[in-house]
Amino acid sequence: MKNFQQIAAGVDVMPLSLELHRQTHLWDKNPCRLSKKGPHHETQDIFLRFNDEIPCIKSGDWSKFNDLHIADWYESIDHLPSAKKLIFDLMATVKGEVLGGVFIYRLKPGTKIYPHEDHSWHADFMDKFNICLQSNPAAAFIYEDEMMIQRPGDVHHFNNAVTHSVVNNGPDDHIVMTVCIRLDRGYRVPWSPEGWTMDKSKGR
Image (tube, rainbow, N blue to C red; front, top):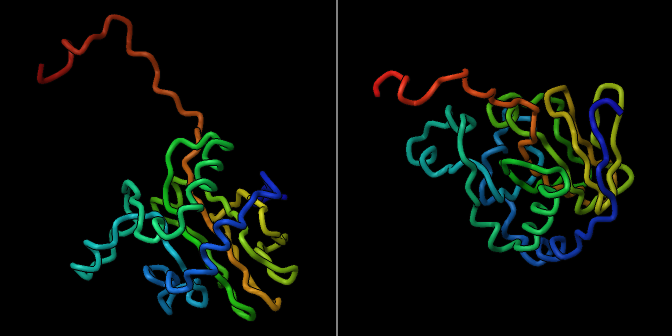
């Protein structure tokens, strides 16, 4: 597989699934991805972590929403405490270094996420992982020449920088938690030049 890799199966997602089932009011409390102009407008979302949207709502200017930021927890995380175990277990498994955005999306039967690529500071800085909470055999994550069928408890790393889409042609909801994590990319700051000290820096 070129664009995705399964890294776990059989993860216990039942506690989070039960919390979701009991709290249907949480869907679309923060609908920042659901513009009719965007590829995700047929989904329903629960944002657990991302950039603070309050300044954008107050100003009406969303142009910098995806710029460099430190992600904050959203209010929904306190209603879905089981999500944190899944998130931090995943962080430990992949040796993640920075936790970025986390959201849960739902595709009802007959809906889809339209073909698109993700490009922004956050999308380029983070790697993306999907934890499947609920699905069916007719729901698929699709690339041009391959597709991924997910089962509850499956965890996949996927490439969001190439064109991808998701379809649910089955009878049941397709529900996934996407966790964005910065991995070690291998860059190392070199040792300072021989003989250099802070006393030799400008302004000192």
